[in-house]
Amino acid sequence: MRTIFYIVLFLGIPFLAIAQDAPKVGDELKINEPYGQKFNHVSFPQPNILIKRGKVANYNSVYGVEVVVSEVKLADEDNTYVMLTKKDGTKFFGYLSEVRANYHEALTSGELEIKK
Image (cartoon, rainbow, N blue to C red; front, side, top):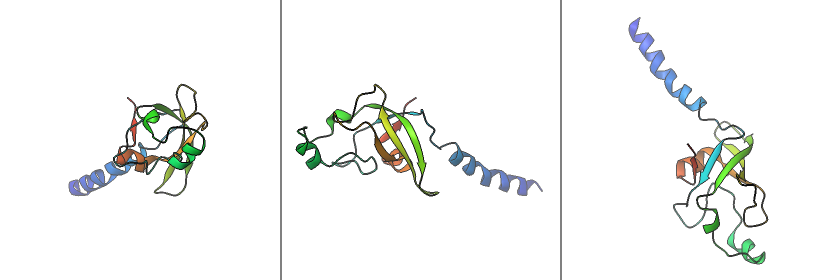
């Protein structure tokens, strides 16, 4: 009887950890520098679009920016997309008020970090 209790206990703990990882509107995050040259899980515009709009074609202006989750969209059970707005209310690159990000993938890759 005791072994059944321990099996149920250890199988149930990972499910509780996954359930607590769900994003909520109002959560604060920080954008980090990506591992490669571009963001893979945060949907910033391509450099050629920035050049056409007269902006500098790099992402240095978004490194370290604090953002707030404004909307949560559940695509399927594996992908949760969030809409991010800047905490200070300004726009990304001077024209985007919000950007979309794959929440779990961006956290795993280090592009986003939960602000504590």
